Length: 278
View 1: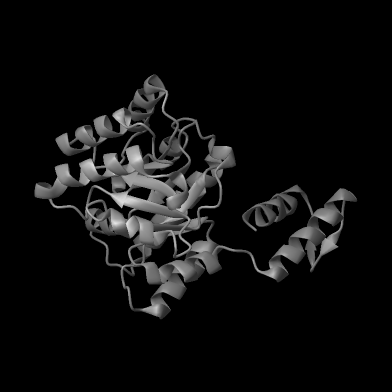
View 2: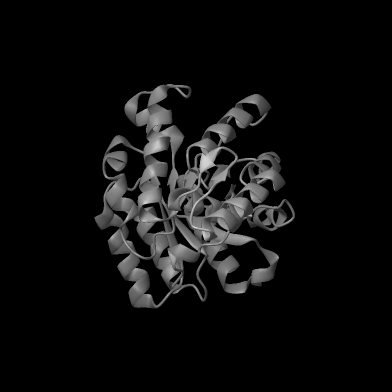
């Protein structure tokens, strides 16, 4: 099982319809950290079975080297589609690296799914998605729902619909901050929602600046053109890396000041995080 404390770099997560496995292969040449085969929102009900079969074929036959780390977003497990998705993944010859769990609203939902994969002896990490007011109300307990939970992903579109908020509303910013804080307490990764304005570079830059400044480790995308900017935003600059090294050198001496900031364990922990991300 993947221990959430050693989850590798997960800056960029690209959604692709599971009906188009060729797009997952293309993603490997785009610098994507995690390629997501989506069985949920991007697949109409009539195509769910076909999409599920294609994911199963991908897991049974594809050589790992052909893909970046692979995630599968299943349907909600309160639906028949979601239950059938789980069965397909439990029976596959190998598991994806991550399984995205949409519309999670309690830790019990996560624990039940984790128990199934424990029983199957399947190594995969779980990424619950926070997409409703009820989910946000339970976000701290969801983040701590078990060792398989590697990250939380915020689902902005569904959350906005649930709380009747506009895309630029303060409500969404506050929700994003709470998700990131919950991930920090659980020592797991916080993954931001996609920027849905595909051709609005200014909005994407603003979105990324907010995510980086407020504790996120990565961001999802629905278009490959966003991947280079996401990777760049979540990769520490040379100046930031140099700062982190100076902080840790000062910390080894017991006390000190670096760039006007007193070095203590909190600052040293921040510096270690920078070097880990680099």
